[in-house]
Image (cartoon, rainbow, N blue to C red; front, top):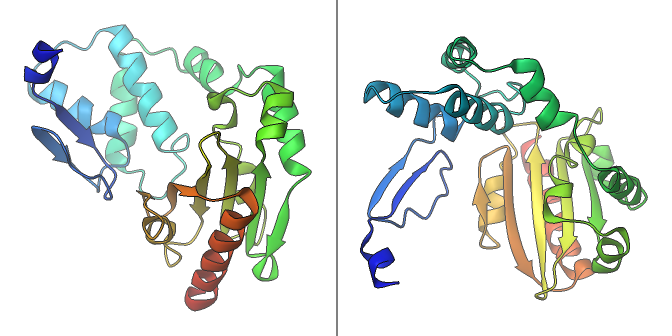
Length: 228
């Protein structure tokens, strides 16, 4: 353990709310993906990028940018993606593994979540919730809910989408997404000890599912009303 403590901690990230602990810290909030920062570092230092490394960097960039859909995706992002393809990435195979390879329980989870779906702020706010009871009944694993909030964000007229997940430690995991930079969900999550980006953020909030829902929904609705 003492040997591990003597190893310098290096943190590389693109979240502006990063707490910046560690011995070596590099945070670039202008970068659309941490994978993009890593690619620039590896190429600048002339480290080899094998096909396996290229595939992992491509996967990191693709998931961080919402499959290159988010507004902070740049020309450079596409240039890097093209270079990674040149270095051996099979785009079809990688995309299928990332986005078309889900277990059936994930779809069962989505069906359960859609049954809890609610709207507020004249349809500009949408949210759904996962209770511990439902998670146990469905046999949900932590990775199963990744990206499910996008079904809410994709609804026409919705500006802010929220996913509430009841945890076993007396807290609720809150994931928030915004389609309008005027409605900063990172600012909302920071009020509850969380963080992230303007358009994508999260927090873990102590309280019951209903208590946390009420507090977060009120804050989100107020932000929508102030800024839209």
